[in-house]
Length: 298
Image (cartoon, rainbow, N blue to C red):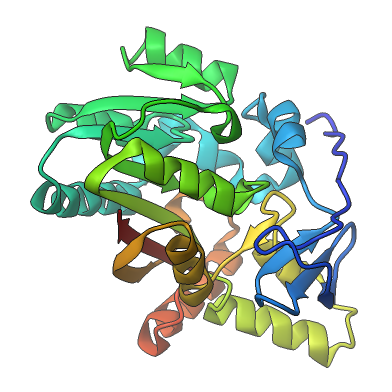
């Protein structure tokens, strides 16, 4: 696979609160993982901006070029055949939303391959989706008959008070200005509408072990940390930091739960998959799984 050229952007201030004071936690190959001294938010510097991400990931195969382990994660046929966990979580979320919102108008931000939009439509939701990928948008419109638009969230305007539910599945960790984007989405929601956000958990057991290896080796062992604080994600959250961001953006937290990466979607070798499955099992026992889902209400 061809090498993908990526240009990173240096940060001058914290993407959460605007402070210029930060502490470098981990120095990786091309970027550092930093914590804001003011709001305690965690972010990478330099980082992959939304503008650069659109250039890089307009080709869905680019993610696999950057990280071969996740290439199958974005292969539609592979996901359909191997991702029971992902689809079960989608059904759980729709069950929850249908019990707790009165209307059935939904926006999926960064809809990707369109699986959640498909399931929502089959269950009677009036769905709209946005994504910056030409390929995803074309497929969703022409093959799936979905109402979608090619837009980044930062460009998406209008629709005041229109949606009963908005979903950000693996999107918030990619945003340049997360607080501004969430506040704008709040304005697009009906009163008592619900926002569902899913993202990796920065306080997971997997992250803790990777941090331990980095520190114990005096920064020489970087590989595990690079798999947790990945280049593609400029922002990193735990349930507490995500809650604070949502509350500052006008939302009230309704539910927060842990989840885990659907390992059947990853290109992991047999030995590595056994190791990761063992860590995931232990993570459930100590309640430190590697993903979080937060549902908030306007």
